[in-house]
Image (cartoon, protein in one colour):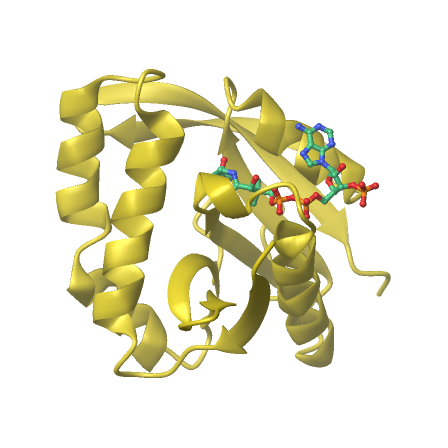
Amino acid sequence: MSEAVIRKCAPGDEDDLSLVGQAAFLEAFAGVVSGRDILAHCRRQHATEKYAAWLRDANSAVWMVEVNPGRAPVGYLVLTAPDLPLADIGPGDLEIKRVYLLHRFQGGGIGARLMNAARDHAIARGSRRLLLGVYSGNIAAIGFYERLGYKRVGTRPFKVGENTYNDLIFSLGLGR
Ligand SMILES: CC(C)(COP(=O)(O)OP(=O)(O)OC[C@H]1O[C@@H](n2cnc3c(N)ncnc32)[C@H](O)[C@@H]1OP(=O)(O)O)[C@@H](O)C(=O)NCCC(=O)NCCS
């Protein structure tokens, strides 16, 4: 497999993140949920400005995966303040909002490296817990999170385009 480089993003990366975000979302959910919903979700939730806002926000961090030769972007992770319906959300919590790799680059340990980068960043910031939401039908991602030690702690409705899907909420304690 090509060599993958993970780097922390900065303002100016928003166009590249929007492109890889849309490509990875379409690839992940085509044939799984409504195509119209996927395209509407990409237009709204993967707009350049969404990523630009995270890159400006001191409480958020974004990492991008690039592959050599060529340094093309093939994946990313967004870590930010949580927006999840849990009763005990507190200032020590952070949410892994998105973690995606294009299909050809999955299964080689890059996802775990991205999750470790986010975990190390959260620990360095004094966070006590990482949270995330995942579509209940995304069996592969659920297996991945469980392998990394995440435990199921709740559910939430998740709107994609015009339809609402059922998400599971997972949590990883950071030992504080
Ligand atoms: C989910 C995703 C980020 C995982 O990244 P990845 O590079 O494929 O995963 P890794 O190769 O780093 O796997 C890390 C560990 O999880 C395990 N794992 C991965 N997929 C698994 C599965 N379906 N079931 C059980 N364990 C799994 C791996 O075996 C590995 O464990 P090991 O080190 O003991 O072998 C990636 O597959 C992806 O982008 N999928 C599509 C988009 C998506 O669904 N994102 C999540 C949206 S919520």
